[in-house]
Length: 188
Ligand code: GLN
Image (cartoon, rainbow, N blue to C red; front, side, top):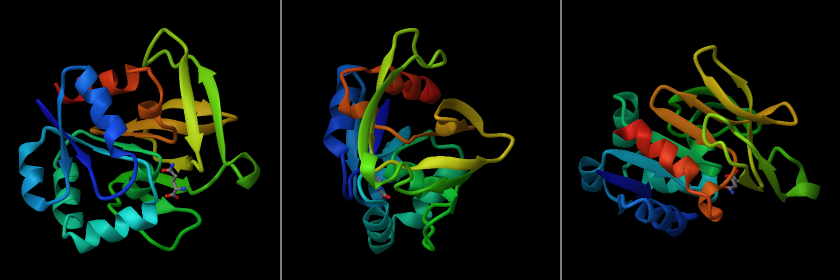
């Protein structure tokens, strides 16, 4: 199995390290031909505006969108979630538009730009997981067939729709591997 990590901007290497710890081969995806070699893809955190622009400039946007629509297991963390959303509440831009969610960017307010929380997410692990939020979005609305995995303060911060997983937070910035393990199970 080979998992691609979209490597245009943002927190790429941390995802690659986590995948390697689970003995999964990970490759950086920057060009169209690399899309053919992967069984799943992670869209990392970073700046959605920048990654979205680079997706267009590198001509990856349309082929990647087609692959996701045809079932490629895909996980977006933070900015990655924004790229996947069909609707963005506070932005006129749209990117891959493949998941039936409405997201709000930088949604937890400037005073709490970044914060951590420890929660149990039964679907992912029986152990408490550290959740790291950095200028994070949340899902303000989701279609009926979007499965909600976790909420904080009544806001959706992890969800799945078929082959697409999204998290507002950054499991790659903690030592916990459970979310990466869950994503790998979506591939096999
Ligand atoms: N605030 C960023 C955006 O809107 C996302 C932050 C992140 O990925 N850590 O793109």
